[in-house]
Amino acid sequence: MKGIYVLLMAVIVVSSIGCQTKIKSNEEPINEMALAEKWSSQDLESFETAYFASGCFWCVEAIFESVKGVKEVVSGYSGGVEENPTYEQVGYGRTTHAEAVKVYYDPEVISYIKLVQVFFGSHDPTSLNRQGPDRGPQYRSIAFYKNEEEKKIIESYMAALEESMVYDRPIVTQVVAFDTFYDAEDYHQDYERKNPNNSYVRQVSIPRLNRFKKNFPEYLKEGSH
Image 1: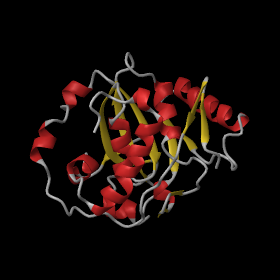
Image 2 (image 1 turned 135 degrees about the vertical axis):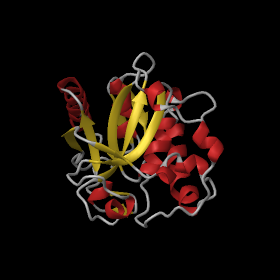
Image 3 (image 1 turned 90 degrees about the horizontal axis):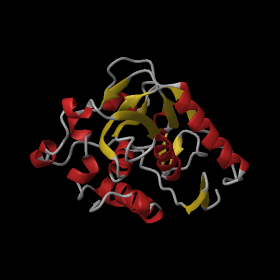
């Protein structure tokens, strides 16, 4: 893959890192103070939502939560047909779902097209069923759309990347009509922030977040961790 991603009219250097394949367990205590900081469901109803999948949701959640205009990100499962999947089922590839995130955002601060830019700029969309060392269809790249306008934005952006020959390989990101999103178990929410000493977080999630922050400084919230 080449090292330059064309973001519509801008050109930004991007590096990608995936997540591990191992099943991550709830090995760290839940930080109750962190949970108290979460937005309530009623507060979030006034914001728009977007859905993406690009590998381990711990990593993806942390990236989107660092973006200004994003109010909340929920880790979960989407893209499959099974109802109420569990982490063990999805993580071991026993469902057709992928690890995904639900992004609540303020369109007056950040546009949907910029979220699409964040999505493509923070992972390798040419890697089939894999991000870094994480392998399996549960880690596939998916851009979900809720309407035809979102679909057009995603497809136009992908076409621009392809026409600019940004990659040495074809983009394999799936463009899928959004259906249902299942929230992941509570201990997965804000995992990277609440468990900074977890070995997976130190070795994979934080480096991936730092790479994104280095390449997209203008997209970051003030004081982003």
